[in-house]
Image 1 (spheres, rainbow, N blue to C red):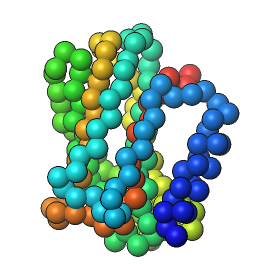
Image 2: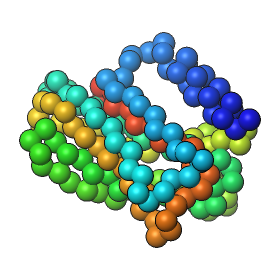
Image 3: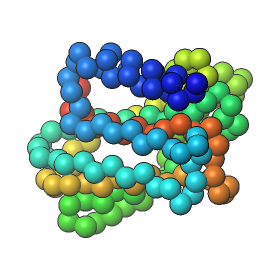
Image 4: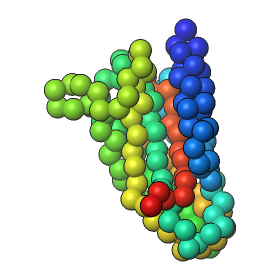
Length: 155
């Protein structure tokens, strides 16, 4: 039943966003058994052609309402076309201090976006973004999927 709800919400999102500008990249990584294990590191390979263009990056975390934390720390490793890499920590806030959801709740699914500042990428070519969960436990339960979207910055 949860997989059907997840598929419905994902398809609805695709339909609603298909009417506007198309992103240059969009991919969703689904976690087996709704569990993000520490050794699982989703990768997103983005081809950048126009280095004069600013890009908006959005990470979308989808959990169930049974997710037991109010946030999630992640590390994002970015590898540029020339092989240089950087690793940065980010916090995704999932609930407010009063326990209410920050993201959009539909039934038992909560989608929480993390928006990154618009930026230009210095080199044309393939960038690889690798995401790691950054908590001390070996796995996080009630995590459905992690989407990564890159689009031309809105002026």
